[in-house]
Length: 142
Ligand SMILES: [Zn+2]
Image (cartoon, rainbow, N blue to C red; front, side, top):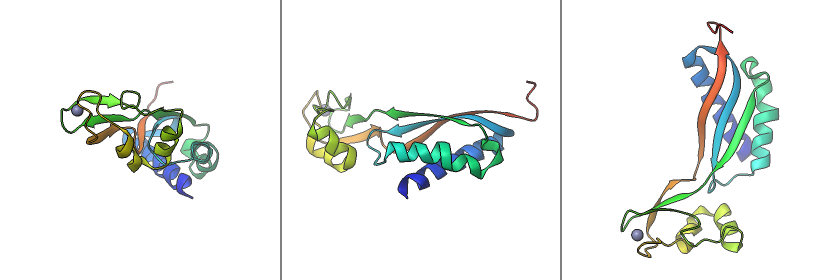
């Protein structure tokens, strides 16, 4: 299951950070999921909140804060950065849906608002980012 594997890598990364920081309890994990990431959000969050916390004692009672990172394009011709709305992509229509499922299709739809070029790099909105973890360790004077 794709979503479980992705959730697992987020949790493993968080546990690594916790190791480095000397935390032995993780209270909160903040994750951003790119708008273009092909993922079933409900399955992903189910994996994070229900399946994985049972795999490590440091995760007992952990809370996840999962939010969506909007896509950002940067024009390769003129360098303008723009978002989905400025790209002329209708987020509520068929085009928006297609892009959710096939990120490569955004090249067929997105146009630079300054120069009209369809040639761009995707700066944000793809992949999954571990933003921050919060927790406590032995030395914590709480
Ligand atoms: Zn441009």
